[in-house]
Image (cartoon, rainbow, N blue to C red; front, side, top):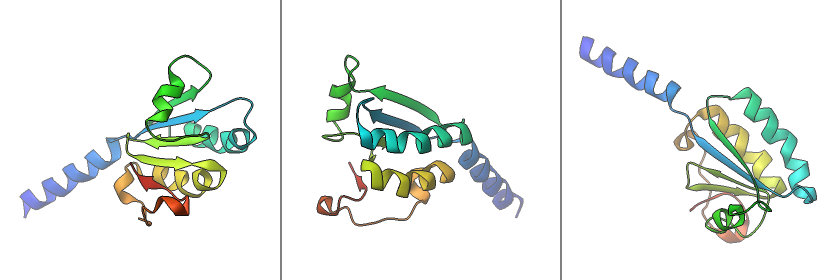
Length: 121
């Protein structure tokens, strides 16, 4: 019984300290990016334990990083495999991922790219 309790406490502690890596790709002259940026900044302040990275794609090398995941901005990449794109998907799903600490805790939708919803990369 003690072993089970120790395992459960250990798993709980690991889930609390595990932080996601959240990369936000944007352009300063993009109206969709400007629409999403306040939410991303709010979540950045609300969940400081995550590893947040902000990439202006006009800075050298950032557009190449983005091209691995998406063709446009705004785009959020979580732990190098969950991709959220656009001014509708990011506000819809990013708060869930930021709150849950790991991408495995969020609801799963179809990975159909034609729906323009989030997908696994």
